[in-house]
Length: 146
Image (tube, rainbow, N blue to C red):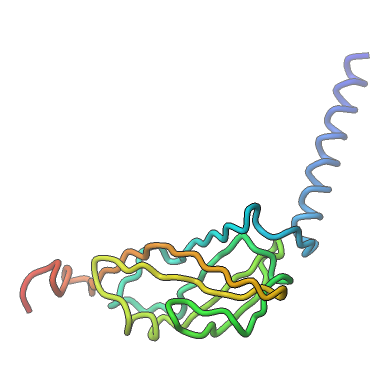
């Protein structure tokens, strides 16, 4: 009897995990963020101006299907790429060289602005740590005089 119960429990767990993985990758897109609060996460979290970086990536909690992709900007810069992550939420990529022109150490607050397909303007901000270090130590105001 206990072997049967254990077997059923293991099968249920395996089925639940498989179903969860399938649903999270299905592109199913749920409702907009509760209360209309848009949240963002920046990647990389620390931007080294001296390092070769292609993109500043913004991850959000709003389904791409609810966003007018042409309206998306980061700190006033037009998005270079707009697509959905595995959960169907908006991901934005902006050219790192463009961002480098508007930020300086030690940090910068970047605001993602967008308009939903229903015409609702939304925005959220996050702080990007900014350094300028080429391997010989920091340069600029935080480091030794050049």
